[in-house]
Length: 96
Ligand SMILES: [Zn+2]
Image (cartoon, rainbow, N blue to C red; front, side, top):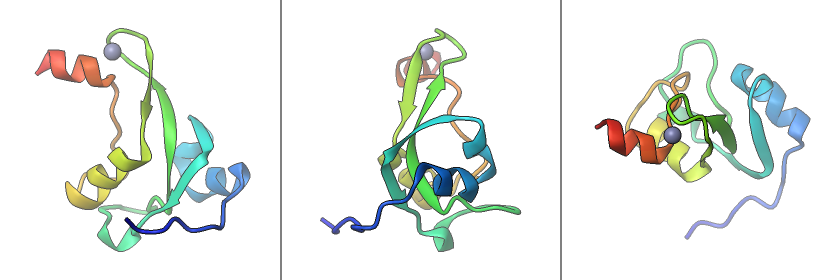
């Protein structure tokens, strides 16, 4: 396992790093630096991944889009960085 960077980033620094972070609830303690070179982005990359709390569009429950999931989405699957899940994991499985 890779060591985590000991340097933590402030909630404000995270907020300023990516436009969508102004509008979402996230857990600043979960922040990890992203590998921008692997991301698929337009004007703005996501320099940090951070656990984000979204409300599921289907069941209205809150769910967390986790750092490790984001790494897979944006660095392995090559999803555009502006894309994010709108449904919780349970609902995503149900609608399949
Ligand atoms: Zn749901």
